Amino acid sequence: MTRTSVATTSCRGRPMTRFSLRRATRLATLLACACPAVAQAQVPAPEPPDKAKDLAFAHAQVLDAPEVPDAIKVQPGEKVLLRARASGVQIYVCGTGTDGKPEWTLKAPDAELLDEQGAVIGHHSAGPSWKHRDGSAVNGKATAHVDAPDRDSIPWLLIAATSHSGKGVLASVTSVQRINTHGGQPPAPSGCTSSGTGRKVREARVPYRADYYFYAPGAR
Image (cartoon, rainbow, N blue to C red; front, side, top):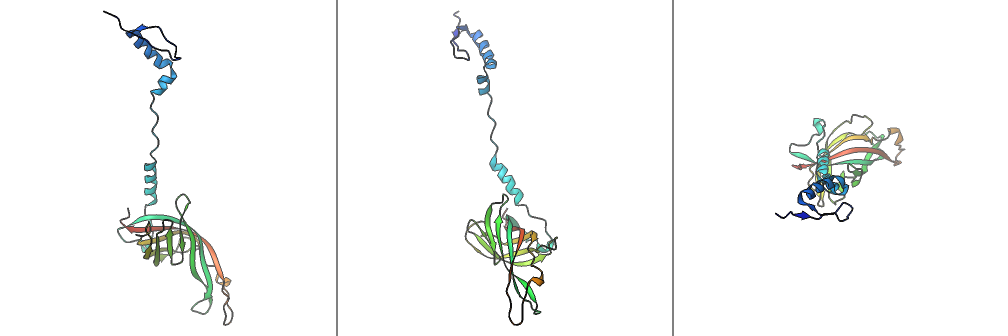
């Protein structure tokens, strides 16, 4: 019987002497251990992280509804659509109260709406209204409130949507909660002055921060 032989090449590319098939097989096994390049090529590369799953998990955490007092809870069936952190000011104007004494009256909020990474995604202004960078907007009216845990901060609110504009994330919002407020209370009454029949109008811009939760039916 004719013995089959093969030709092979060393790791450095130099021709090798012909060997029998059995010896060539043994040599191939030794080469797999002796040649780092060959051994390394057989190790599969690690799979890249699944960014889509990571983002979905993070988004699910953001959409969890907060624990709030019963007075400002939303209706059953409404789910969190978006959470935004507001950073800006509450604008007050000095006027005259029903008792004839000077008092500060809220004119409007003026705040940027931020996402979890601190990027600006919208604006909060008079109305009250909220406008998202996608062009959608919602206006609302406060229907309930509770005092903030910090007496120097503005109240927590439940707000019912009254109108919408544009197409986007805020177009289907039915309720808004303002919670976790910091600051924003009007200045002391002594800072608001008036005299005789005239009134010296003064405006105060008081810094504040808050979390706004936007709800829609079956949003999640």
